[in-house]
Image (cartoon, rainbow, N blue to C red; front, top):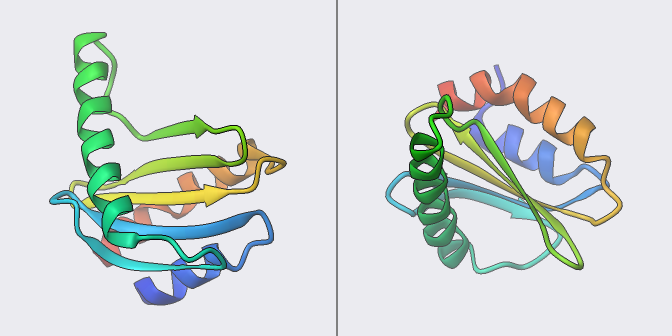
Length: 117
């Protein structure tokens, strides 16, 4: 099986993805890659906080556990995907991204990513 670095770099190499950050539940960046130079520490802290709030929102709405959230910004899309109980994956994508295909790929890779943490 490929290592975490290989998987993250593979995701970041997709033409529709600008950046990928693996985030611990404590809000620390574990690994990041991409064509866009982002503040990985700020992204990690905010993504972990966002995921925590989204989980609480789901609980209040009596939903099953959170698996992924899609955020639509004017100039980009962002996905925050849970990686088991250890962290989250933040993916920053281009606005024209086929989000369904990206979500499908992330869902398919989620167990492998979670095992690498």
